[in-house]
Amino acid sequence: MKQAYAEIIGSRDDLSRPGLLDTPKRAAKAFDFITRGYDQSLEEVVNGALFPSDSNEMVIVKDIELYSLCEHHVLPFVGKCHVAYLPSGQVIGLSKIARIVDMFARRLQIQENLTTEVAEAIMKLTNAHGVGVIIEARHFCMMMRGVEKQNSSMKTSAMLGEFRSNQATRSEFLTLLG
Image (cartoon, rainbow, N blue to C red; front, side, top):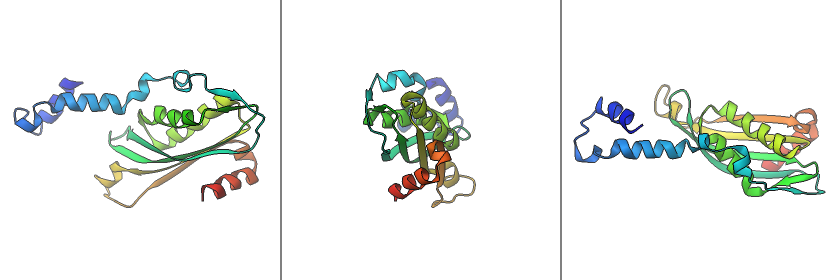
């Protein structure tokens, strides 16, 4: 990866100038960190943090910040994710929801797929009656290049189970998000 960055940067600038001497190494390390989701599995991230519970009321974790790279331009998109689920006999550790979001976000990604992957993972893990996920993000591929629209954002949602089939459940989720 370091060599690839050296070739890319060297095609535009002088790699021997002081500010760029270690840039290929630093860029490779940063890219490895930003895409660390490829090195994680759902089982590893959750680490058994599923607990029996009689609760069947909606659980919401909102404003989970996320950072990802779009798979089309390898430019960042940043935003927040809101996750809700209706437990059916077990709940997942609170921090694990944020870790699941991070695991999928830390891959080359499009927001539409990220939203669905998070929802399907929570549904699979918890056997919930339903899961709702909404992601709001700003895409640097629209801000730094192309149409250069600085104030644009994108919202995506994935509604599974009761969140899809029951309008009241979906409305409660949306209302609680404010």
